[in-house]
Image (cartoon, rainbow, N blue to C red; front, top):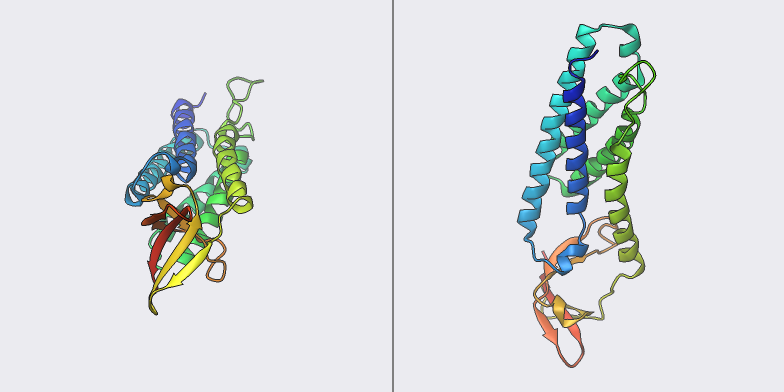
Amino acid sequence: YYQGFPIAKSSATLININILTILISLSKTYKKFIYIRNNTLKKIHIYFGLSIVFWSIVHSISHYINFIKHMSILLINSGSWLTGNTLIFFLIIIVISTRINNSSIFYIIHNISTIILMIIICIHGSFCTIKYNINTCPPSQSWKWLLSGIIILLVEILYKYFFTKYTSGIIKYSDKLYQFNFKLPKKYCGKLIFINIPEVSKLEWHPFTTSLYNNYTSEVSLHIKAR
């Protein structure tokens, strides 16, 4: 009987809930209906990220105590031990990547590490290292939580790339000031829209506030100062 088992399972559930919340917070669809400042979303992302780190520490310590109390070669050589320590490694990389000043390098390291981490999480709980009894293993639940968030993001990404809006015109006011026009409903005026310039990066989407609506052309405009 593993005394740290209830703590390990409880903290694992909290990790799954926090990961789902972070995935949902990345969605931009609800921003069409609810205005949330980007700085607020960043704080929410950091908060739930730190929550994942905290409960991961609790989860790991409870398992390490189990391994120490019931020292076994089978436990140390198990898939749970290997995937668990690999998860800790990638979690450390994700935390360290937040200190990188270069946004492109941060984006690549942070996202690749996150994808690998989510894949390993789905595998981590499926080795039946700890059992309820001799014949019963606790089923892995992580994939269910992750799948819900991933489906939401995947549908949004597919919609964004297949039904994306291209600029209907660009007005150059000076060498540094440009106006971009988009065929969008009036409800978008004053809200954020995310712009992607493939020549700069196909992965980066940058937020800009729309500042003008033309009733005659049904166009929403935004102004960008080039640096």
